[in-house]
Image (cartoon, rainbow, N blue to C red):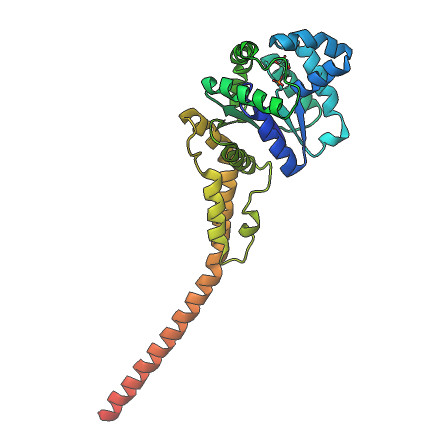
Length: 294
Ligand code: AMP
């Protein structure tokens, strides 16, 4: 699975990425985390990024592109990855397109977590309170003032990526205001729909012929199902992403249907033959009786 999670700070990208890491054993690449580690280690990149990050601005494109390019070459990338917080600008997205092309890596999907901005401040405040309660160090950029700046830079620099990936038919949008559990379910549904992971009912589709049509139809239904409460646009893009899998499921339903139909047709034909035989016998008996009477 090769996935990009897109969304403003506090949208839940990190939480969802963690869940996917646990479920599928893939690697999460968070440029924010990498940069924070560089700051702590006081590497040249860290020293360069420190003040920029503290102010809520974006670190120069060439720095993050360099970090990601090096990371993609490491062996643990083979099983797949989730990009969280990268790309964040159109030049970063263009550079990533090039990198993936060069490395022959195909991106499965870009999932945008769409959230209501007014709720983000509450979320970040909760996150800060929870971190403090756990005795963890609070991020220097997790203050209301810096958050507004990060949100502004998301709007102007990162939101154009929605168009970038939607044009490339890679974008699916999930309503990030749903519960964590619901968002996870929706994310998994999209991943199955684009073929990035095995759909839940995949085993059922290869069940015995008579059961197959139902199972396959079920899978087709799930893959093509509209998201429950996503915005109109979000639903549209989710459907777009689900299209290929939905087509595949329909095809397999048709195929399974054909398989199931042929033995059934055989049985019906057998019964009809028997019925025809007994009708012919009865008719012959009647005729013999009539002749005998005459
Ligand atoms: P995050 O943890 O993703 O919210 O990132 C924290 C901070 O790291 C951001 O506010 C930026 O200053 C910097 N950063 C992370 N990823 C990028 C990126 N792709 N491009 C530029 N700056 C980034």
